[in-house]
Image (cartoon, rainbow, N blue to C red):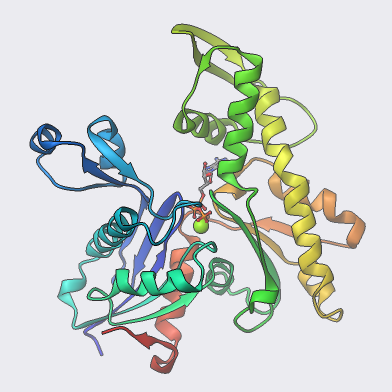
Length: 334
Ligand SMILES: Nc1ncnc2c1ncn2[C@@H]1O[C@H](COP(=O)(O)OP(=O)(O)OP(=O)(O)O)[C@@H](O)[C@H]1O
Ligand SMILES: [Mg+2]
């Protein structure tokens, strides 16, 4: 038995994390770069690049984000990129030193049933047996909160909301919204471009500004950024726009939570209302738990909190689950 490695994998639309029973923990952006032409291939000295390495060399590469929302899962180039990415992610925890690898995998909620067979194809040859669980369930399991909680995972592509009461949630227990990190970035980019005509922004620049300054609340804060406006440097305050774009997502998330509470068994509703856990990168928006709690106060007493280590929580929860599940729970994919 000592020769079995357990792994937990969080495949995210923006970034992915792997945790292993040997103590490995690694997060990288879910991005794959293929050199654009033979010159680029020669200059880079490798056929495929991953995560930060791919981004650093993005001008010499065709970039793939194989888990992003809207990527067709039957698109061959993306499927190949997904497989290469997952192989690379698993390689970081040295699986070849073990006789077998058992993994619990969390995949983005837009990966539908037919796509799950792609997921299996992607993992075949690297993992002997897998179990696929939802992101909110892995989070709750890792936090020892499966007894009664609502997990609200604000990721990049989606916000996944689920009620958890002691067992695996069914589809009825979960809801997925497209109001998450990428959506906030789009709002912010629109607002900046409207206010500063000619501002030259990329999605990555906008995301960086949001991550540095994100907040919700009643008062505008000062957030000074450097913009290129028609090639000319300008230092401007985008504090009001950061607040507006983060605030814009709140009503959708709050109504999502209300719906998940309202359709629960009425005897459980007070327990669920009292343990609402915010996770995912969006939980790093300053003030988000308090803001959501205020908006929920009309449904009774609520307790809303943000989990620690939101970026690695899903993978460490998946690993914890992997280590305690009996073998019958796994599907062999040899
Ligand atoms: N300090 C921050 N403030 C606001 N948003 C942040 C912050 N740090 C990271 N984020 C956002 O969190 C998102 C990434 O979070 P996470 O890693 O949970 O997503 P993911 O798992 O890749 O996506 P998904 O769960 O939708 O598949 C990005 O949109 C990122 O910009
Ligand atoms: Mg995620």
